[in-house]
Length: 360
Image 1 (cartoon, helix red, strand yellow):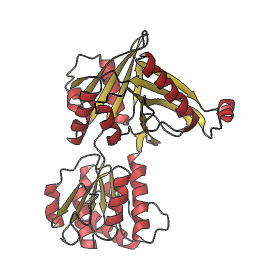
Image 2: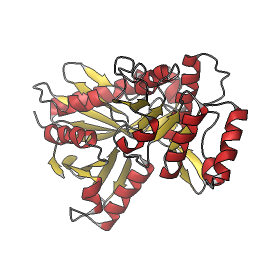
Image 3: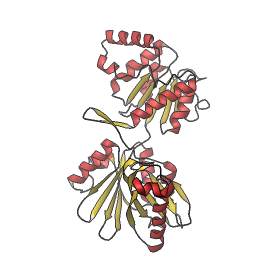
Image 4: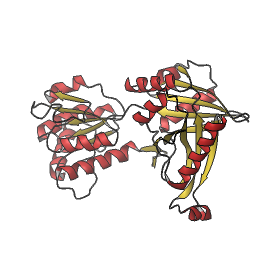
């Protein structure tokens, strides 16, 4: 647990997430006098052990925020608001097979936010020079590699080994781990035969039906790069979904822009403001959880959507940095005549929190 405002708390957030912890940052806002009371960082262990004497209502909403992987804003009383922001380690993608598809797959998946482990039993294919974007490269016989991986519920697994025998071995070892995603390459004929073999070996047909195979979204991909893109597209679709009452819904996965968080955590003599989208409706460029930093000297990092809407919020943030305001929640309207008069192409609304960093 960490209680503070900016520098120490956000430095600790980076450390805890890098250690594999799910975390939440609680921001208590007093609307009566527009004061930012405090920020609190909690890990999932802190939450499970109820390390702070918070109301059950707050803990229920913290767990809801973690479950939905989405930012929540709740009212505690007439004068107090609580912002709950969940943060997660990068989703882990484990690629079994280091061949011609694995190389672009690693590169593209890294760019969209996955932490990647590549496994192959051939030294020529399993090395950091070949996979500079991978967090870990394991050169090991596939049968022995599973002991080197502590599978997690939210892991993504892609099986693209060089042959039917290795694919089957890997699938048999990962199918019972209740993973977020399993995808396996192969033609429909070959896959059908492999699945029939596993059913004869008493593997659950229900579980086997959850495997995405042939892998990827059908975009008529032919080249390794195109196949990799089709796989990454499918990975994103699984990353950005949750299920409610058997219906798949999209959610706004709270961003963990490492460079931006580092900037929040860095001591700086220049006054700065932190902007966070609390909620959005309709067609807007960015969703709840998107962040931006703006400095008094005009520098900025990140974006809450760009254009006139962002400019208005930045102007308000500058005024607050000059007059000593603590926080403000701004309503941004991009609908109807308002949007048309400003030349906006979107058609929605946003609520944006402006926080002034008082730690300098």
